Image 1 (cartoon, rainbow, N blue to C red):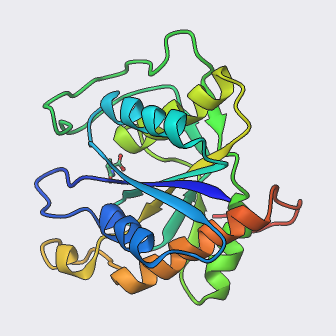
Image 2: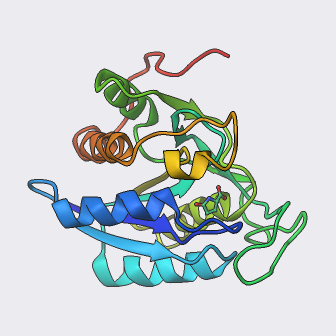
Length: 214
Ligand code: PCA
């Protein structure tokens, strides 16, 4: 099973991005029976999509999981949907701050994740780690990459499942944001490994409730 796993470079003045810290470590440790390619994406609108598409063309993954930081969230968030808009409240790492711009002119309003999101949430919780289905990946670079990857796969009719996972701050980041939650790197790594294994094993969610109603 070939899996492309991406993280992001730090942004918004942070010294690190937990997504790349965790993704890089998963690449080093490996998962039995899986060929995992890891990639650190620039936190830049559009550029991140170009880099990811180039890697997909070269590696031909069967599953793509992109990971990013969601500072302030307390749970690992399996994103349900990506929407066709860039609407940034801060600049990206090249100083771009698009407002109300479509990602793909004339493209669909949204793409659903093609990962088994509820099965992944359930499996991560079974490891004793807080996880949720998230119904918004925001409108910054993480939503941009999720939409871009799913749009590319749909346009090219490539048989590959893909989605996005948001993770909390690491404790060393949260000390600068009093009151904000954090999660240790080891816990995030275990959560992501569980997500990868579940995505490889289960093609589609069964129709059972797995998220929260509020
Ligand atoms: N998080 C940002 C972009 C890069 C990252 O790690 C986001 O949630 O859009």
